[in-house]
Structure formats: structure tokens, C-alpha cells
Length: 561
Image (cartoon, rainbow, N blue to C red; front, side, top):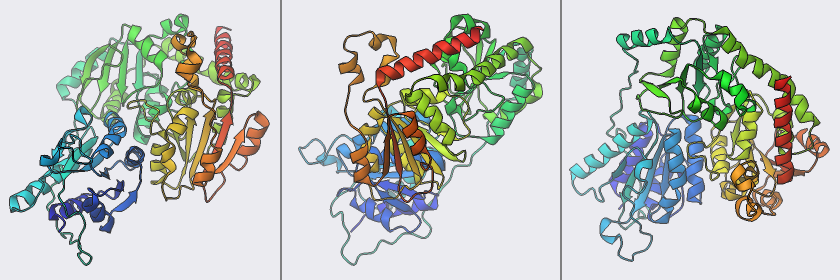
């Protein structure tokens, strides 16, 4: 007989709006698997590799902005979720993690598939719960439903994030042949009543007084999803010359009024010194640009960070105020209360942006075929109404170097690892009919090949694979680049191509090694298709490093003229 509390758990999930579940096959989790699979209001998919499954769920939850349930069996299966759980925690993505477990008396007794699962994710979940291992007494069933409600509420309470429920299950795991699951029509549910947080009138007066004495304001939005209201407010502040808006590609806050090409000049001390602000205002999560972070850490500016829970994020080591407010409320207040700033400061930033914007396309055109130039060409063909997933290391940096994007840009920058990039993009394809372009390097791509090991169609997936047969980023980092062990121990050369993978998983595939082949392949790369497509751009790691160096030198010359 299947525990009724497990059936209740799934009914509560459905009642509270969880519409998607990703599970991995196993025996201990069979009661959960069957309950989710049989509930008509929850779309359940099965992904065999738990590490990939967790990133796929993350990719879905990131887009849906609602929790996705993750279900696995006991033992190392739960440990394989960990990279995605950590990523979800730092990206503030809601996941409901349900791990089947053996009863407590069988842990550490040489019984199969056992690890210490209670609180296994440590500080990388918002909270861990342990479900009762029976529902013999009414209070146990009440306790179970209370836990499930609290856990789901926590996933979306600001800041959103992963929540773990560990579920000890005893045999039998499978119902009798004719046994049906009876989902309660009205499961016990309690919901969070959400409220908006904003500064007090007294606090705003003090902030207004402070604003009167600063003349160089820099607003730095961090990683977040596109938000038309925020973009309009930022554009208004920029058009009024109230502030300079510096927006990395992951901020999804880029427009004709924001600075997007800053990585091309902030690395030059003689230029960046004159651009130091009096006040930094930030909101959102992390930024990509190391040169921007270093420049702001060296400044003498004050730093205000806006976050609804007022949590301290001292990225630039200049933090003076945590402002407990929604960014929308605070930016709207800024529009109404900020006077025009130092016009020379504003114009200096925008003059640099214009110079790089005017020169970069021609400079790239003059350079030899390589990752940088090839990706610039590919992005010209990427549909405006689409989404771009980008892997870490060089892929995301190239994207940032290339400036303003109209598409939503998504990257696993919570922990900035290479694992899970493919899987997160796959999860995104499950939520939209728009084209999803994954831009990735070879190390990240082959590391996560099990992302495609499932039975679901992804006709809207396009993969641009930058294959230099090595970890090319280490050639632009001074430390490893100067070591004799560079090629063997840092770049870790490999000879793989994606051709066999494409055949195994049913992708359309083309490999290009020069500009002419790439242009030919791009003609129908984004055309409608029944199958996903891979465009593999094969280049040389040393050549890519040389092109990047030459582009930087040319840009610097254009700024000095």
C-alpha cells in the first residue's frame, strides 16, 4: 500500500501551481514517480542522468519563474543534484527537491544506496525538511502536508531558491496491480500572502539629501531576466543624464541608452581612472566584467545595493547602504528625485561607447577566422525573438565583448561552472517555442553531453559550438598562460568533434573551418526544423588568443586617436 502522504504531497503540488516535474528512474522513489506520473495536472518528464535532470529542471524554473519538482531515488542520485542545486541557490531559482531515502535505521548499515541524505545540500538550499516515514496516525499525515506547504511557499518567497524534502520510504514501493491512487480533491493548502517592501519616508529624505552632493552616479544592474518596466526607468535616467547605466549582457538591461562595451576600455588605467563615480547603485545579481569590478573596487565611491530583503552584497567593497526595496520602486523614485549630473562625466562614458561601437565591426572583419569573428557573424543571424544560453569561460566573455543584445541572455553565473550548460538550455526549450541558441565551448559541451540523452523533442534548439580542442580561456589568463604546463594541465587538449554525438541524438550537424563554410552553413541554420541543429566552429586555441590580443590593441588605438 502506497503511503497516502506521498499521494497527498503530489496533490498539494498541483493545487499550489506546480505544473512540471523532472524525475530520474529508480526503485526507492517509485511511489513518488507513480504519483507524479498519474496526476493529470502535472507534466512529468524522465531524465536518466540526475545531474543533467537537475539542470534541466533549473532551466525550466528559470524561465517559468515557478518551482519545478525534482524527484530521484536514494543514495548517490541525490548527490548528483548538488551542482544544479548550488547554481539555483545563487541564481535564486525555485526548485522543489524530493529525494527518496531509506528509513533512518538502515543508514550506515552496509545496506544498498544509502548516504546521509537529511540536510545533504547544506547551506545551498533555503531549508531542508524530513517527511515522516509513516502515516499511521492522523497527526503524521497532517505533519506531512504542513511540511509540503511550507516547502513550496519557501521556494518562491524572496529570494526564490531551492528547498529540499527528504522522504524515507519503506517497502512495498509499488501498488497492487489493480490499486489506484486517490488524489484528494481538496488537499490541505496554505499560501504565502506577499507584500511589497519599500523604504520609509524618513529614509528616503536622508537618501535625497545624500544625492544632492554627488555628481557622478553609476548604475550597475546585475544578472536578471528582461523587465520592460526596469528598462524604461533606466533609459529615462540615462536620457535625462541623471546617471550612467553600465549593463553587462547578462543584466538583460541593454539599450541604446546604456553602456555595453565597457570591457574594451576599463582595462586601461589611463582611461578608467577618469571614469570613477561618486556613487554606485546596483541591483540584480552578479556581473561578468572583471575590469568593471576591479575599477569600482579601486574607486572611492559609495555603494548602494537595492534588494528586497536588504541583504548585504558588497561586490565592490564600497558598500555604504543596503536599500530594502524593489528595484522598480527605487528606480521610479530616482527618476522623480535625481537632478542632472556632471555632463562631462556622462559624455565621457558615451563617447567611448560610440567610438568602440563604430570601430569594432570593421576591426573584426579585418581579422582572420576564429571564435571571436565567427561568433560576431553568427549573432547577426540570431533571431531577435529568441533566447541565448551561453556557457561560461570564453563563450560568455565573447558575448559581453560584442555589446548590446536584443535577445534574452541566460548563463549559469550563480557558481560560474561549466557543468550543466547544455542541460539548462534543454530545460529552456521545454518552456518555449522560440528558438533557443546555446553558445558553448568544447569543454562545457562535451562535459554535459547527457543533456541530450532523453526521449523528448527539441526542434527549437540551436547549438553554436566553439571547438578549439582545449580550454582556450587559460591562454588569456597571465598565470597559466606563462607556464610550460599550459597545454597539458590547463588547456587539457582533446580531439573530439560533435559529429558522432549529433548522429547518436538525431541533430542536424555541420562543421566549419573558414569564413566561407560558416556563411554557407548559416543560411538555413535558423530555418524551421524537426530536429535540433549543431554548428561546430573548429578553430585553433593559440590563433584565437592572438586574434583577441590584436582586437584589443586595435580598439585601444581607436580610443587614443
